Image 1 (spheres, rainbow, N blue to C red):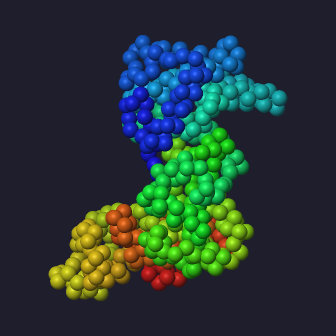
Image 2 (cartoon, rainbow, N blue to C red):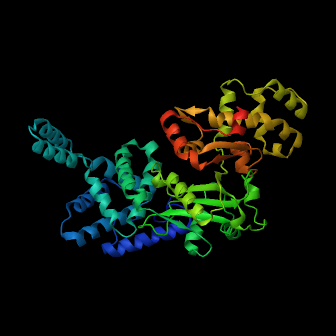
Length: 475
Protein backbone atom coordinates (compact mmCIF):
# COMPACT_ATOMS: atom_id res chain seq x y z
CA UNK A 1 0.00 0.00 0.00
CA UNK A 2 1.19 3.46 -0.82
CA UNK A 3 2.63 5.44 2.06
CA UNK A 4 0.37 8.47 2.35
CA UNK A 5 2.96 10.64 4.07
CA UNK A 6 2.16 14.22 3.09
CA UNK A 7 4.16 17.34 2.35
CA UNK A 8 3.43 19.99 4.93
CA UNK A 9 5.21 23.32 4.75
CA UNK A 10 7.86 21.70 2.55
CA UNK A 11 9.03 19.53 5.44
CA UNK A 12 8.36 16.03 4.06
CA UNK A 13 8.28 14.19 0.77
CA UNK A 14 5.12 12.83 -0.87
CA UNK A 15 4.06 11.49 -4.26
CA UNK A 16 3.23 14.25 -6.73
CA UNK A 17 -0.49 13.64 -6.91
CA UNK A 18 -0.82 13.64 -3.09
CA UNK A 19 1.10 16.89 -2.91
CA UNK A 20 -1.28 18.45 -5.44
CA UNK A 21 -4.29 17.13 -3.53
CA UNK A 22 -3.17 18.57 -0.22
CA UNK A 23 -2.10 21.88 -1.71
CA UNK A 24 -5.64 22.09 -3.11
CA UNK A 25 -7.15 21.36 0.32
CA UNK A 26 -4.91 23.91 2.02
CA UNK A 27 -5.85 26.54 -0.54
CA UNK A 28 -9.59 25.83 -0.26
CA UNK A 29 -9.52 25.89 3.52
CA UNK A 30 -7.41 29.05 3.59
CA UNK A 31 -9.98 30.75 1.35
CA UNK A 32 -12.79 29.46 3.57
CA UNK A 33 -11.19 30.62 6.81
CA UNK A 34 -10.18 33.96 5.28
CA UNK A 35 -6.85 34.08 7.09
CA UNK A 36 -3.46 32.42 7.42
CA UNK A 37 -2.82 31.06 10.91
CA UNK A 38 0.23 32.35 12.80
CA UNK A 39 0.89 28.69 13.75
CA UNK A 40 1.20 27.65 10.10
CA UNK A 41 4.48 26.00 9.12
CA UNK A 42 5.83 25.58 12.66
CA UNK A 43 8.08 22.59 13.21
CA UNK A 44 7.08 22.27 16.85
CA UNK A 45 4.67 24.14 19.10
CA UNK A 46 5.85 25.77 22.29
CA UNK A 47 3.80 26.28 25.45
CA UNK A 48 2.13 29.48 24.22
CA UNK A 49 1.34 27.97 20.81
CA UNK A 50 -0.17 24.86 22.42
CA UNK A 51 -2.34 27.04 24.65
CA UNK A 52 -3.46 29.00 21.57
CA UNK A 53 -4.27 25.72 19.78
CA UNK A 54 -6.45 24.58 22.69
CA UNK A 55 -8.36 27.89 22.60
CA UNK A 56 -8.95 27.50 18.88
CA UNK A 57 -10.32 23.97 19.38
CA UNK A 58 -12.57 25.17 22.19
CA UNK A 59 -13.86 27.97 19.96
CA UNK A 60 -14.74 25.43 17.27
CA UNK A 61 -16.63 23.32 19.80
CA UNK A 62 -18.60 26.30 21.13
CA UNK A 63 -20.00 27.05 17.61
CA UNK A 64 -20.35 30.76 18.34
CA UNK A 65 -21.71 33.04 15.61
CA UNK A 66 -23.65 30.53 13.52
CA UNK A 67 -22.82 27.89 10.94
CA UNK A 68 -20.72 30.07 8.63
CA UNK A 69 -18.45 31.23 11.45
CA UNK A 70 -18.15 27.65 12.74
CA UNK A 71 -17.05 26.44 9.29
CA UNK A 72 -14.49 29.23 9.06
CA UNK A 73 -13.01 28.35 12.44
CA UNK A 74 -12.89 24.62 11.57
CA UNK A 75 -11.24 25.41 8.23
CA UNK A 76 -8.67 27.60 9.99
CA UNK A 77 -7.92 24.84 12.49
CA UNK A 78 -7.61 22.24 9.77
CA UNK A 79 -5.31 24.56 7.86
CA UNK A 80 -3.04 24.72 10.91
CA UNK A 81 -2.77 20.92 10.92
CA UNK A 82 -2.04 20.79 7.20
CA UNK A 83 0.76 23.34 7.40
CA UNK A 84 2.51 22.07 10.52
CA UNK A 85 5.62 19.96 10.12
CA UNK A 86 5.52 16.35 11.28
CA UNK A 87 6.48 17.02 14.93
CA UNK A 88 3.89 19.78 15.15
CA UNK A 89 1.16 17.54 13.72
CA UNK A 90 1.92 14.96 16.37
CA UNK A 91 1.50 17.65 19.05
CA UNK A 92 -1.78 18.74 17.46
CA UNK A 93 -3.08 15.16 17.56
CA UNK A 94 -1.90 14.69 21.14
CA UNK A 95 -3.79 17.78 22.28
CA UNK A 96 -6.93 16.54 20.54
CA UNK A 97 -6.61 13.08 22.09
CA UNK A 98 -5.67 14.00 25.66
CA UNK A 99 -7.48 17.30 26.28
CA UNK A 100 -10.80 16.78 24.53
CA UNK A 101 -12.03 13.42 25.76
CA UNK A 102 -15.16 12.70 27.83
CA UNK A 103 -15.54 14.53 31.14
CA UNK A 104 -15.05 12.06 33.98
CA UNK A 105 -17.38 14.08 36.19
CA UNK A 106 -20.11 14.10 33.54
CA UNK A 107 -19.75 10.33 33.03
CA UNK A 108 -19.88 9.64 36.79
CA UNK A 109 -23.00 11.78 37.15
CA UNK A 110 -24.67 10.07 34.19
CA UNK A 111 -23.85 6.61 35.61
CA UNK A 112 -25.30 7.63 38.98
CA UNK A 113 -28.44 8.92 37.29
CA UNK A 114 -28.85 5.64 35.42
CA UNK A 115 -28.40 3.61 38.59
CA UNK A 116 -30.95 5.78 40.38
CA UNK A 117 -33.56 5.53 37.59
CA UNK A 118 -36.75 3.89 38.89
CA UNK A 119 -38.81 3.37 35.73
CA UNK A 120 -38.36 2.87 31.99
CA UNK A 121 -38.80 6.53 31.10
CA UNK A 122 -36.14 7.57 33.60
CA UNK A 123 -33.80 4.82 32.44
CA UNK A 124 -34.18 5.83 28.78
CA UNK A 125 -33.40 9.44 29.66
CA UNK A 126 -30.41 8.37 31.76
CA UNK A 127 -29.12 6.15 28.92
CA UNK A 128 -29.20 9.07 26.51
CA UNK A 129 -27.44 11.29 29.05
CA UNK A 130 -24.77 8.60 29.52
CA UNK A 131 -24.32 8.21 25.76
CA UNK A 132 -23.74 11.97 25.39
CA UNK A 133 -21.34 12.00 28.33
CA UNK A 134 -19.29 9.14 26.83
CA UNK A 135 -19.02 10.88 23.45
CA UNK A 136 -15.76 12.81 23.39
CA UNK A 137 -16.04 16.51 22.46
CA UNK A 138 -13.35 15.95 19.82
CA UNK A 139 -15.88 13.87 17.85
CA UNK A 140 -17.85 17.08 17.25
CA UNK A 141 -14.72 18.69 15.82
CA UNK A 142 -14.03 15.69 13.59
CA UNK A 143 -17.56 15.92 12.16
CA UNK A 144 -16.96 19.63 11.49
CA UNK A 145 -13.87 18.70 9.47
CA UNK A 146 -15.97 16.14 7.61
CA UNK A 147 -18.33 18.87 6.43
CA UNK A 148 -15.52 20.87 4.80
CA UNK A 149 -14.45 20.45 1.16
CA UNK A 150 -12.41 17.22 0.91
CA UNK A 151 -12.95 16.78 4.64
CA UNK A 152 -13.45 13.00 4.40
CA UNK A 153 -10.06 12.56 2.72
CA UNK A 154 -8.53 14.84 5.36
CA UNK A 155 -9.83 12.59 8.16
CA UNK A 156 -8.77 9.38 6.38
CA UNK A 157 -5.23 10.69 6.14
CA UNK A 158 -5.34 12.02 9.69
CA UNK A 159 -6.10 8.49 10.92
CA UNK A 160 -3.27 7.14 8.75
CA UNK A 161 -0.91 9.50 10.52
CA UNK A 162 -2.32 8.62 13.94
CA UNK A 163 -1.71 4.92 13.19
CA UNK A 164 1.85 5.73 12.18
CA UNK A 165 2.52 7.66 15.40
CA UNK A 166 0.65 5.21 17.66
CA UNK A 167 3.45 2.72 18.51
CA UNK A 168 5.48 5.56 20.06
CA UNK A 169 2.51 7.67 21.18
CA UNK A 170 -0.03 5.46 23.02
CA UNK A 171 -1.86 8.59 24.20
CA UNK A 172 -3.29 8.82 20.67
CA UNK A 173 -5.28 5.58 21.10
CA UNK A 174 -8.55 7.32 22.14
CA UNK A 175 -8.42 9.59 19.10
CA UNK A 176 -7.68 6.59 16.85
CA UNK A 177 -10.74 4.76 18.19
CA UNK A 178 -12.96 7.77 17.56
CA UNK A 179 -11.65 8.20 14.02
CA UNK A 180 -12.08 4.50 13.25
CA UNK A 181 -15.65 4.52 14.56
CA UNK A 182 -16.59 7.52 12.42
CA UNK A 183 -14.88 6.22 9.30
CA UNK A 184 -16.44 2.77 9.70
CA UNK A 185 -19.90 4.33 9.67
CA UNK A 186 -19.10 6.72 6.80
CA UNK A 187 -17.51 3.96 4.71
CA UNK A 188 -20.29 1.44 5.17
CA UNK A 189 -20.59 -0.67 2.02
CA UNK A 190 -24.02 0.83 1.34
CA UNK A 191 -22.41 4.24 0.72
CA UNK A 192 -19.73 3.00 -1.68
CA UNK A 193 -19.87 2.82 -5.45
CA UNK A 194 -18.09 0.22 -7.55
CA UNK A 195 -16.73 1.47 -10.86
CA UNK A 196 -15.06 -0.31 -13.76
CA UNK A 197 -11.95 1.64 -14.75
CA UNK A 198 -10.67 1.60 -18.32
CA UNK A 199 -8.22 3.43 -20.56
CA UNK A 200 -10.79 6.19 -21.12
CA UNK A 201 -10.97 7.00 -17.40
CA UNK A 202 -9.50 10.38 -16.31
CA UNK A 203 -5.71 10.53 -16.51
CA UNK A 204 -5.49 11.80 -12.92
CA UNK A 205 -7.26 8.65 -11.74
CA UNK A 206 -5.08 6.37 -13.86
CA UNK A 207 -1.99 8.06 -12.41
CA UNK A 208 -3.19 7.17 -8.92
CA UNK A 209 -3.55 3.51 -9.90
CA UNK A 210 0.11 3.48 -10.91
CA UNK A 211 1.11 5.01 -7.57
CA UNK A 212 -1.22 2.92 -5.42
CA UNK A 213 -0.56 -0.56 -6.91
CA UNK A 214 0.76 -2.55 -3.97
CA UNK A 215 1.18 -6.11 -5.27
CA UNK A 216 2.74 -6.02 -8.75
CA UNK A 217 4.36 -2.71 -9.61
CA UNK A 218 2.90 -0.93 -12.64
CA UNK A 219 5.94 0.00 -14.70
CA UNK A 220 4.54 3.06 -16.43
CA UNK A 221 1.76 3.88 -18.87
CA UNK A 222 2.42 1.02 -21.33
CA UNK A 223 2.12 -1.50 -18.52
CA UNK A 224 -1.10 0.13 -17.29
CA UNK A 225 -2.51 0.14 -20.83
CA UNK A 226 -1.85 -3.61 -21.00
CA UNK A 227 -3.68 -4.11 -17.68
CA UNK A 228 -6.70 -2.28 -19.11
CA UNK A 229 -6.82 -4.22 -22.40
CA UNK A 230 -9.96 -6.01 -23.66
CA UNK A 231 -9.07 -9.24 -21.86
CA UNK A 232 -8.47 -7.41 -18.58
CA UNK A 233 -10.76 -5.72 -16.08
CA UNK A 234 -10.10 -3.29 -13.22
CA UNK A 235 -12.71 -2.43 -10.61
CA UNK A 236 -12.54 -0.02 -7.67
CA UNK A 237 -14.68 1.17 -4.78
CA UNK A 238 -15.23 4.92 -4.38
CA UNK A 239 -16.83 7.05 -1.68
CA UNK A 240 -19.14 9.83 -2.95
CA UNK A 241 -17.10 12.43 -1.04
CA UNK A 242 -13.82 11.10 -2.50
CA UNK A 243 -14.82 10.66 -6.16
CA UNK A 244 -11.28 10.61 -7.55
CA UNK A 245 -9.73 8.50 -4.77
CA UNK A 246 -10.03 4.72 -5.27
CA UNK A 247 -10.34 3.09 -1.84
CA UNK A 248 -9.47 -0.40 -3.01
CA UNK A 249 -9.10 -1.86 -6.48
CA UNK A 250 -8.82 -5.32 -7.98
CA UNK A 251 -7.17 -6.27 -11.27
CA UNK A 252 -8.61 -9.19 -13.23
CA UNK A 253 -7.23 -11.22 -16.15
CA UNK A 254 -9.61 -13.20 -18.39
CA UNK A 255 -7.85 -16.42 -19.41
CA UNK A 256 -8.35 -20.11 -20.11
CA UNK A 257 -7.70 -22.27 -17.04
CA UNK A 258 -5.92 -21.35 -13.83
CA UNK A 259 -3.00 -18.98 -14.32
CA UNK A 260 0.26 -20.21 -12.78
CA UNK A 261 2.80 -17.44 -13.47
CA UNK A 262 2.31 -13.72 -12.98
CA UNK A 263 5.06 -12.69 -15.39
CA UNK A 264 3.27 -14.59 -18.18
CA UNK A 265 0.00 -13.02 -17.10
CA UNK A 266 1.44 -9.48 -17.28
CA UNK A 267 3.50 -9.95 -20.45
CA UNK A 268 2.93 -6.77 -22.48
CA UNK A 269 3.92 -8.58 -25.70
CA UNK A 270 1.31 -11.30 -25.35
CA UNK A 271 -1.62 -11.01 -27.80
CA UNK A 272 -4.93 -9.72 -26.45
CA UNK A 273 -7.47 -12.53 -26.15
CA UNK A 274 -11.17 -12.41 -26.92
CA UNK A 275 -12.85 -12.19 -23.50
CA UNK A 276 -15.90 -14.06 -24.84
CA UNK A 277 -13.70 -17.10 -25.47
CA UNK A 278 -12.15 -17.25 -21.98
CA UNK A 279 -13.49 -19.41 -19.15
CA UNK A 280 -11.58 -18.13 -16.11
CA UNK A 281 -11.33 -14.82 -14.25
CA UNK A 282 -8.04 -14.46 -12.35
CA UNK A 283 -7.88 -11.85 -9.58
CA UNK A 284 -4.16 -11.17 -9.62
CA UNK A 285 -3.85 -7.97 -7.59
CA UNK A 286 -5.91 -6.37 -4.83
CA UNK A 287 -4.61 -3.06 -3.48
CA UNK A 288 -5.93 -1.13 -0.48
CA UNK A 289 -5.03 2.48 -1.18
CA UNK A 290 -5.90 4.35 2.03
CA UNK A 291 -3.87 3.58 5.14
CA UNK A 292 -6.42 5.50 7.17
CA UNK A 293 -9.05 2.83 6.41
CA UNK A 294 -6.99 0.00 7.90
CA UNK A 295 -9.23 -2.42 9.78
CA UNK A 296 -12.33 -1.33 7.85
CA UNK A 297 -13.24 -4.25 5.60
CA UNK A 298 -13.83 -3.44 1.93
CA UNK A 299 -12.10 -6.17 -0.09
CA UNK A 300 -14.51 -9.02 0.59
CA UNK A 301 -17.46 -6.95 -0.67
CA UNK A 302 -15.50 -5.83 -3.73
CA UNK A 303 -14.66 -9.38 -4.84
CA UNK A 304 -18.28 -10.52 -4.52
CA UNK A 305 -19.50 -7.52 -6.49
CA UNK A 306 -16.89 -8.10 -9.19
CA UNK A 307 -17.86 -11.77 -9.53
CA UNK A 308 -21.51 -10.78 -9.98
CA UNK A 309 -20.59 -8.11 -12.53
CA UNK A 310 -18.37 -10.47 -14.55
CA UNK A 311 -20.95 -13.26 -14.56
CA UNK A 312 -23.51 -10.84 -15.92
CA UNK A 313 -21.16 -9.40 -18.58
CA UNK A 314 -19.49 -12.68 -19.61
CA UNK A 315 -21.68 -15.76 -19.03
CA UNK A 316 -18.91 -17.91 -20.51
CA UNK A 317 -16.83 -17.50 -17.32
CA UNK A 318 -17.00 -20.63 -15.18
CA UNK A 319 -14.03 -20.31 -12.84
CA UNK A 320 -13.12 -17.46 -10.48
CA UNK A 321 -9.73 -17.67 -8.85
CA UNK A 322 -6.81 -15.61 -7.64
CA UNK A 323 -3.14 -15.77 -8.45
CA UNK A 324 -1.88 -14.56 -5.10
CA UNK A 325 1.45 -13.77 -3.44
CA UNK A 326 2.53 -15.59 -0.28
CA UNK A 327 4.17 -12.66 1.53
CA UNK A 328 5.05 -14.33 4.82
CA UNK A 329 6.41 -17.69 3.67
CA UNK A 330 10.16 -16.98 3.68
CA UNK A 331 9.93 -15.11 6.97
CA UNK A 332 8.09 -18.03 8.58
CA UNK A 333 10.50 -20.60 7.13
CA UNK A 334 13.58 -18.81 8.45
CA UNK A 335 12.01 -18.50 11.90
CA UNK A 336 10.78 -22.11 11.96
CA UNK A 337 14.25 -23.44 11.11
CA UNK A 338 15.92 -21.14 13.65
CA UNK A 339 13.52 -22.42 16.33
CA UNK A 340 14.20 -26.07 15.46
CA UNK A 341 10.82 -26.92 13.93
CA UNK A 342 10.47 -30.60 12.89
CA UNK A 343 9.60 -32.03 9.45
CA UNK A 344 11.55 -29.48 7.44
CA UNK A 345 13.55 -31.83 5.19
CA UNK A 346 13.07 -35.53 4.49
CA UNK A 347 15.90 -37.97 3.85
CA UNK A 348 15.02 -37.87 0.16
CA UNK A 349 15.14 -34.05 0.18
CA UNK A 350 18.64 -34.09 1.69
CA UNK A 351 19.81 -36.66 -0.84
CA UNK A 352 18.64 -34.58 -3.80
CA UNK A 353 20.09 -31.38 -2.35
CA UNK A 354 23.42 -33.13 -1.71
CA UNK A 355 23.53 -34.22 -5.35
CA UNK A 356 22.69 -30.68 -6.53
CA UNK A 357 25.17 -28.86 -4.29
CA UNK A 358 27.94 -31.44 -3.93
CA UNK A 359 27.89 -31.18 -0.14
CA UNK A 360 25.94 -32.35 2.90
CA UNK A 361 22.74 -30.37 3.45
CA UNK A 362 20.90 -30.18 6.77
CA UNK A 363 17.69 -28.25 7.37
CA UNK A 364 19.69 -25.39 8.85
CA UNK A 365 21.35 -24.87 5.46
CA UNK A 366 18.05 -24.28 3.65
CA UNK A 367 17.79 -20.51 4.33
CA UNK A 368 21.37 -20.06 3.10
CA UNK A 369 20.63 -21.96 -0.12
CA UNK A 370 17.78 -19.62 -1.03
CA UNK A 371 19.18 -16.40 0.45
CA UNK A 372 20.98 -15.66 -2.84
CA UNK A 373 18.24 -15.17 -5.46
CA UNK A 374 20.48 -16.57 -8.18
CA UNK A 375 19.42 -20.09 -7.09
CA UNK A 376 16.37 -19.79 -9.36
CA UNK A 377 18.72 -19.88 -12.35
CA UNK A 378 20.51 -23.02 -11.17
CA UNK A 379 18.43 -25.73 -12.81
CA UNK A 380 19.70 -28.62 -10.68
CA UNK A 381 19.38 -26.74 -7.38
CA UNK A 382 15.93 -25.37 -8.24
CA UNK A 383 14.71 -28.88 -9.12
CA UNK A 384 16.06 -30.24 -5.81
CA UNK A 385 14.36 -27.43 -3.88
CA UNK A 386 10.99 -27.72 -5.64
CA UNK A 387 9.52 -30.58 -3.61
CA UNK A 388 10.56 -29.49 -0.09
CA UNK A 389 9.72 -25.81 -0.61
CA UNK A 390 6.33 -26.54 -2.18
CA UNK A 391 5.50 -28.97 0.62
CA UNK A 392 6.60 -26.47 3.28
CA UNK A 393 4.56 -23.75 1.58
CA UNK A 394 1.43 -25.92 1.78
CA UNK A 395 2.16 -26.48 5.47
CA UNK A 396 2.59 -22.75 6.01
CA UNK A 397 -0.67 -21.84 4.27
CA UNK A 398 -2.86 -24.53 5.85
CA UNK A 399 -1.34 -25.58 9.16
CA UNK A 400 0.49 -22.56 10.55
CA UNK A 401 -1.98 -20.45 12.53
CA UNK A 402 -2.36 -17.30 14.56
CA UNK A 403 -5.04 -18.43 16.98
CA UNK A 404 -7.40 -20.46 14.81
CA UNK A 405 -6.74 -18.47 11.62
CA UNK A 406 -3.94 -18.83 9.03
CA UNK A 407 -0.69 -17.04 9.71
CA UNK A 408 -0.51 -15.70 6.15
CA UNK A 409 -2.49 -12.41 5.77
CA UNK A 410 -3.49 -13.02 2.14
CA UNK A 411 -4.71 -16.51 3.04
CA UNK A 412 -6.78 -15.10 5.91
CA UNK A 413 -8.39 -12.61 3.57
CA UNK A 414 -9.42 -15.02 0.80
CA UNK A 415 -10.35 -17.92 3.07
CA UNK A 416 -12.57 -15.64 5.15
CA UNK A 417 -14.33 -14.73 1.89
CA UNK A 418 -15.14 -18.38 1.20
CA UNK A 419 -12.30 -19.39 -1.15
CA UNK A 420 -10.28 -22.60 -0.93
CA UNK A 421 -6.52 -23.14 -1.21
CA UNK A 422 -6.50 -24.71 -4.66
CA UNK A 423 -2.95 -24.91 -6.05
CA UNK A 424 0.60 -23.84 -5.24
CA UNK A 425 2.53 -22.69 -8.31
CA UNK A 426 6.28 -23.32 -8.41
CA UNK A 427 8.20 -20.44 -10.03
CA UNK A 428 4.99 -18.44 -10.18
CA UNK A 429 6.62 -15.07 -9.47
CA UNK A 430 10.28 -14.65 -10.34
CA UNK A 431 10.41 -10.94 -9.58
CA UNK A 432 12.95 -9.95 -6.89
CA UNK A 433 10.06 -9.36 -4.48
CA UNK A 434 8.47 -12.73 -5.26
CA UNK A 435 11.72 -14.64 -4.81
CA UNK A 436 12.52 -12.81 -1.58
CA UNK A 437 9.09 -13.23 0.03
CA UNK A 438 7.94 -16.64 -1.17
CA UNK A 439 10.85 -18.36 -2.94
CA UNK A 440 9.10 -17.49 -6.20
CA UNK A 441 5.88 -19.39 -5.43
CA UNK A 442 2.31 -18.17 -5.82
CA UNK A 443 -1.02 -19.72 -4.86
CA UNK A 444 -4.44 -19.97 -6.48
CA UNK A 445 -7.35 -19.37 -4.12
CA UNK A 446 -10.42 -20.76 -5.89
CA UNK A 447 -13.83 -19.13 -5.44
CA UNK A 448 -16.00 -22.17 -6.12
CA UNK A 449 -19.39 -20.49 -6.34
CA UNK A 450 -21.58 -23.26 -4.85
CA UNK A 451 -19.21 -23.58 -1.85
CA UNK A 452 -18.42 -19.94 -1.04
CA UNK A 453 -21.04 -19.46 1.68
CA UNK A 454 -20.34 -22.84 3.29
CA UNK A 455 -16.57 -22.23 3.26
CA UNK A 456 -17.03 -18.76 4.71
CA UNK A 457 -19.22 -19.98 7.58
CA UNK A 458 -16.98 -22.92 8.47
CA UNK A 459 -13.91 -20.70 8.41
CA UNK A 460 -15.57 -18.05 10.60
CA UNK A 461 -17.03 -20.53 13.11
CA UNK A 462 -14.43 -23.32 13.21
CA UNK A 463 -11.33 -21.92 11.50
CA UNK A 464 -11.79 -24.68 8.89
CA UNK A 465 -9.67 -24.25 5.76
CA UNK A 466 -11.03 -25.58 2.49
CA UNK A 467 -8.23 -27.25 0.52
CA UNK A 468 -8.04 -28.51 -3.07
CA UNK A 469 -6.60 -31.85 -4.17
CA UNK A 470 -3.13 -30.65 -5.17
CA UNK A 471 -2.51 -29.00 -1.80
CA UNK A 472 -3.98 -31.97 0.08
CA UNK A 473 -1.46 -34.23 -1.63
CA UNK A 474 1.38 -31.97 -0.49
CA UNK A 475 0.17 -32.19 3.10
